[in-house]
Amino acid sequence: MMEAVSLVGQLSGRAGALMNSSEELIARARRGEDEAFRLIFDRYGRPIISFIYDMVGRRDLAEELAQETFVRAYKNLKALRDDSKLSTWLFGIAKNVARESLRYKHRETDKVAIDDDRVIELSDGKLPPDRQLLDKELNGVIRDALGALDEDKRLVFTLKIFQQRSYEEIAEITGSSIPKLKTDLHRARAEMRRRIQPYLGASFGS
Image (cartoon, rainbow, N blue to C red; front, side, top):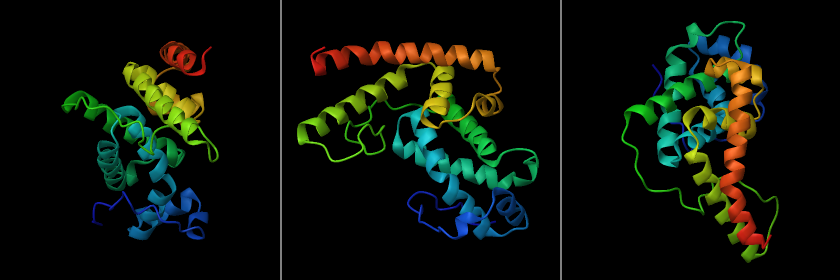
């Protein structure tokens, strides 16, 4: 079997090769073409790492769990149904890996640093130093608020808001009904707003 896909740090651009369709890449990977599976990682590695990071709150652990996700995917390619969407299938595996980690591993209590460049980016250009610091602090507040959500709410909030997945995809990933997902998302939004609003009021003088 291929090496356990040295995932993190290998997100190099293979722009031309990435034009391969998911179906073609899956077929090639099933035939044992390791390069095809590396291309699958190039395409989906970043969103999977980001998703797991939003679930577990630690970058080092997210990278480790992303590697485990793609190793499991590699071993179980034959189990992927032809009518399944590759990204949805991968997110489903990542969800299981993250949940296992949250439930069975000891979680460290240290918080994500507010200047971690993987936290939610709220700016889209160069800002004055004081505004940059404010945005970094707000990122930290958002990260803490996300971590305070219960698992179901954090899962649907992350998949819908950060990963822009449809309710149909999220239902397939989580196994939950769409009405439940909508309820969880509504409650997650309310909790996030409640936790973040005091900071916004204090920071902006509102």
